[in-house]
Image (cartoon, rainbow, N blue to C red; front, side, top):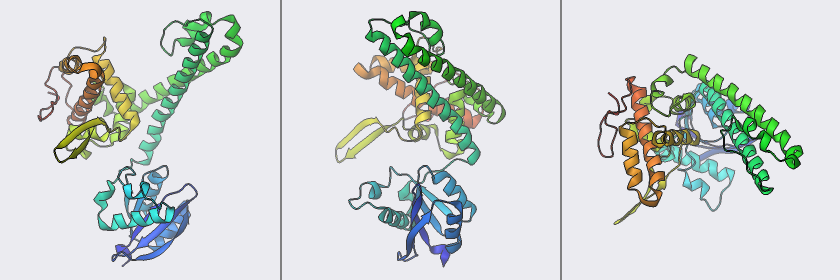
Length: 354
């Protein structure tokens, strides 16, 4: 009856807590297992075909792929949903493994299972994350240089990040050059490396993820956003309609409903933060001075005008959510983008493309 067993694995960096329960909910084995492929294969041989429940984390992608390849049904639990673990008053690795095993035995739907992407897509997504890390480093250094110059009463001219060193070098006070010139050199090196990542991303979209060209038809969606879209969402068929995509990337408001009270809160910010930030950036372009005219832009501007003090912020999030729905439709249908076709409005199921 090994196929009726459920294994809860509380993942750790060095070792994992293990709990095995049978079909009646009785604990038949508890212990520790090293965080190595050989150790996990040994567990697999001891309990072949068992259902394995783990939490999403750093090691969950490769562990889930390994165990699925060994014939197990693997459920990757969403940590946000497993309140019994992170709100427990007696939290320990052993108890966490027990809770995962019991939840997986009773009703896997309670775990809001996470679907990990394939190994190749995970590696390609690492390219985008590495670029983002370099951009953040460059932004931090630029802000530091500007702040230091302001501290001596100076002010550097406004310019784009790639042109920063070229535009501001002659405006750096002589007194600060010994301190800031090494930073300016580092900023130049970071810009060069970011440019290499940009070329690599263009190559990936052209040679490995040609379907990303479908969503690049939308204004404000470049190769970085398009590649992140394909890598994060993985398959268009995962979603029944475009509205679910906005919820998946955390662009829909949270809800607090009880009795006669039904409050809408801030957006959930769940899902992939990188893709959410890229969609918001694309929405800023659509509503900005260089955004091309179209139904989506006009709707967003009208929303911003009547939205009060925070109208612009709400409009940007709303346009980002609409962009997600439109991009999903384009990705799934393969049809051309028409900026004047009626977009997907709340409460209405209308196509966003021709």
